[in-house]
Amino acid sequence: MIAAARCVVRRDLLLALRRRSDVATALLFFVIVASLFPLGVGAEPNLLRALAPGVIWVAALLSSMLSLGRLFAADHADGTLEQLLLGAAPLGVVTAAKVLAHWLVAGLPLVAIAPLLALQYDLPVSLYGTLALSLLLGTPVLSLIGAIGAALTLGLRGGGVLLALLVLPLYVPVLIFGAGSVDMAAAGLSPQGQLQLLAALLVVSAAFAPWAIAAALRISTE
Amino acid sequence: MSAAIKWFWFASPQTFFPLAGAIARACWVGAALLALAGLYVGFFVAPTDAQQGEAYRIIFIHVPAAWMSMFLYVVMALWAALGLAFNTRLSSMMASAIAPTGALMTFLALWTGALWGRPTWGAYWVWDARLTSELILLFLYLGFMALQAAIDDPRRADRAGALLAIVGVVNVPIIYYSVQWWNTLHQGASVSLTKSPSMAATMLAGMLLMALALWLYSIAASLTRVRRIIRERQ
Image (cartoon, rainbow over all chains, first blue to last red; front, side, top):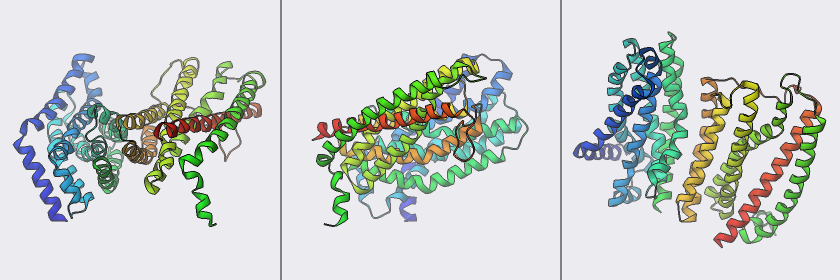
């Protein structure tokens, strides 16, 4: 079981490594979206500082959603997915491994690059830790919930827009707690409560989402 | 005969079709009568509110619609889960039939809320917790309907929609409380089972009449729609 999971993670990471531009595109999208806001709302430093947590979080949400389409599509097209469904390894473990690989490729880079955006928005350096930690706890939840939507919309026409419609409302709690934790820290309060709620969301979704993803894949491929 | 067979007698679309028609007709009539009575009590009998004046009268539609919008999502998820668990076609059809009515109720609650908010809060829309979670509920309904509409194979549409509805119903309380902690401005619930109501008896009567009317309307509309779905698929 562990071996199967490790194998899937390694394979997906290897595939991502071979097609680096896909990874870079989602990351670039994250940076561009965050850079557009000052052009729209004006460059007033106090305003930007207040907006920063929300903008960075919304950009992370959109960027991680954008890369969801690739999660199962290629495997579905070349038949790998059917082999995974037929294989001996429990499908829940396989899907968990795929989500982990997706997060390593699409979520972790966001955490790494977020301080750069925070710099653009003149966020105080003392908040970088909270921002990174909130993204570190929150982005895996985005991948887990998003993968359910990606599995449900597999092979449908207009899949991309539909995926957004299904997944974005479910992202709301992550956004609230994620951006909220940074806001709390900015107000000089302890962000611990919000971060713990994010961690709780992560634990719950990590426990249940892989099975929901597996059920969705079975529905979509039968 | 054993009771089990009788339990599932109406689970077949063919046998359910005429029953649904009969129930729907009765509910349409009941809904119309109760709505007339409720609106009469609401507009002519209930006293003017001391603080909010005449504008408060929109609650006779707003509050029942908001109740129904949340309740119908749970009912829809329940039917969808039944369809997924027992593989009964009719349960899935019921889920699909309820979704548009639920979306309508959500929209109605939001719209009447906006009309009430303008004179009372001075704005059509505020980012209050309940408004926001109601809006997200509308998005959940629309997502469910969009997903089912995008899938051509009805069996796959049923099952995919069911999974989404179950994921949604697990998330609804999480969304509700996260939004609650995020921001709240809305007045507390006006009607509660545990403490005595904070409004005049006639107001309460009007609201309950309207709530019953919307109940019957929802049943009637869903059953009429499920009849159409049965006819379309068979």
